[in-house]
Image 1: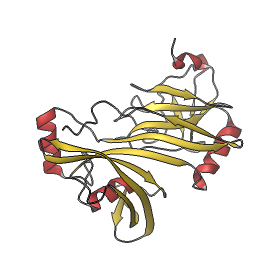
Image 2: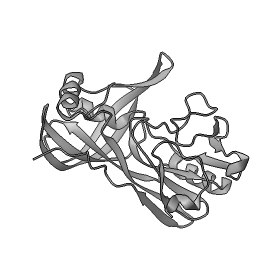
Image 3: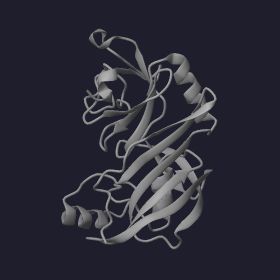
Length: 245
């Protein structure tokens, strides 16, 4: 009997319940390749939950045989990003946590496996990022737009099939679209497996040398203020995030 026994939800492929919080607050562990929500609403076999989703409510609607009711999605991760994502099955809880996200009161920590070694083991990254729509998809462009800020700490370094590699701990202070992916790329530290902002030749060499696919960006921990206290949830870094010796 795991934590999943506490919920009767149709979880997506590989999705597990990482932690159960107060007042209907939950942390789910999302694998790489699973979408936070269906592309066009409705339902999606590769989404966080496989039941119907309402874009208006920003919530999954549970079928009657799963207890009915709603599961609100409190924030999102890119499909290629793994890690911790918060949901709630109580509306008041969902509203409070969404407010915390909107007011930038939530602290998140990511780990990225990148090509290259950073010039400094600790740094504060600041960039301008402009978000625009291309072919129906949101894309971010560096150099213009709103300021994006993140704190970087090198966790490990080594070498792989494509040369120098690092594990970077990243704490975004802002929440711009594709922020961390762009900020890594801007510093010649592209995230392994990033098909939009990454180094395509190094991606190919890495995949050929390791037989590993997907993007190596992981949401490791989230800290959210709730009812006067901080609630912290985390999902352990996958074992394949390894930069060698």
